[in-house]
Length: 136
Image (cartoon, rainbow, N blue to C red; front, side, top):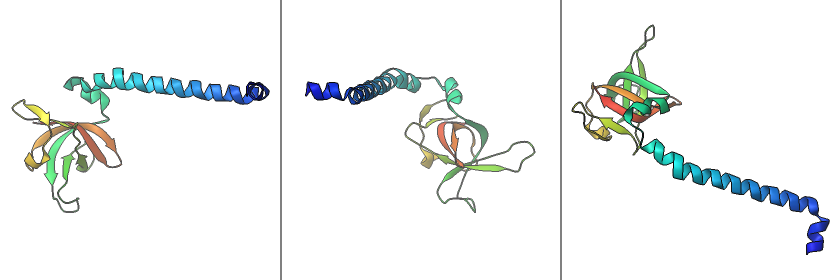
């Protein structure tokens, strides 16, 4: 067997390189999930905006004509543009701040139509995954 490995030295080197590469990737993943990811969860609300590519203030709307039924949207304005309406998607990581200052997991079933809110999140393909919603 050793003779076969020595004969096919090129294959052994390739296998060794693949093993080293896989181990390096695994090490990076372990570092990320143990060191970096917990730090992202513990960031204060002032840092959420830096992790988001969407931050707008507008009004919460639901069941408007032409929009998906039973889905919350943020209606907001930008100078020189017509009113913009964007779908809001909530996850278990979405944080909502009430006018009273109380923060917690978002409960869209408790929202009221026309509530003024600032939304920060990740905008992709015509919707925003909400990181933070603050009722104003």
